[in-house]
Image 1 (tube, rainbow, N blue to C red):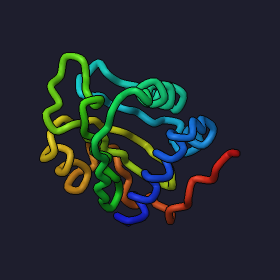
Image 2 (cartoon, helix red, strand yellow):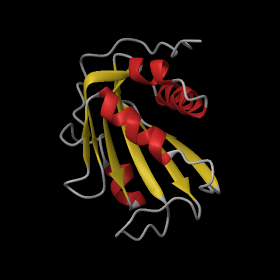
Image 3 (cartoon, rainbow, N blue to C red):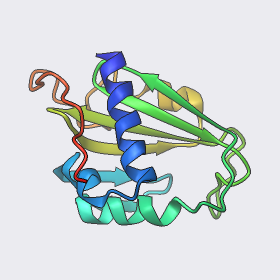
Image 4 (cartoon, one colour):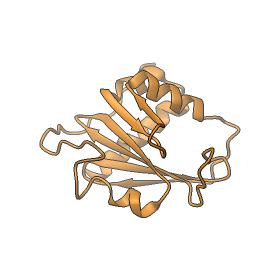
Length: 146
């Protein structure tokens, strides 16, 4: 599942790159939650999550590298570069977005500023990412709405 979760995330980013809002919304669970780096930085529901991702995808923000890290029930996107920053928080190594993926949809996203914390999430516990290990169907590619 590691590879399929990475491929799912690549499809997600491609939809974001194309500003394909319909595909982005379809790839999110209706109860999706995105927890940012601070407790009060939270988005609930597909519309709010997509709105914030689209807002942060500023073509003027420079990104030096993207890394995809696959796991059995999630994938982590690591973005680095001068354009990858958060107000009030130092991001020496960029940001890590951990996407919990179940039944072909993103159920939760958790942000991390620390690689070790991002890598330790999800695999040994089901808490923060809200994983449901027994409720998985095979991965299906995100179909383009265009």
